[in-house]
Length: 256
Image (cartoon, rainbow, N blue to C red; front, side, top):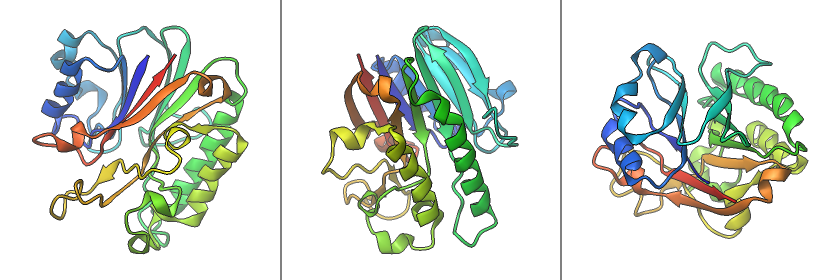
């Protein structure tokens, strides 16, 4: 099974580049974040020809997550069950009757002195509590999405530029590091221990992708069962190079 996670930065604004991904037919399941559209206005019909089952947890103008799969999609949970949130950031399901996916678009938090930063930490702590139940499950559980955390300085092209910024804040990094310490496996870093693997490149500046001026914000975390199934995890740069691109690359996970 090949799974892609991608922050699309508005499904309607970047629908052509997203359709290009579907047309390539490379991925069995696609986890999408930052839809910026509510369920009622999601363009389901445009995607009919590609044969995906689609589950959406949308929000007007902001946030929103979706799962596209060529397999069955069951046991859908929209919104983190243990956290009351007005924002659409969490979508959980079981695909093909055997793999549990958690698609998440974690809060950005802006800067450490912003009123948005406590919400980021609160959300991440609630997420910590929620995923604990799945770490040792015999069921393979995979968390994918835009985590809005660059967990190490090497995941930032110029760390000094991000001092005081929430995505590099020690408190946010510590929460995510706790997940890894507990036993969740960072699939990309495990397979690429010494590489730079940016998944986000801003729109400003000339050739930021070519100049490697990016951040690693997108992840797949696997529980102990899923970690044994990992075959590949690679960055798909094509979505960022499209004619009208999102500001994220895709991240691909292949499992047995």
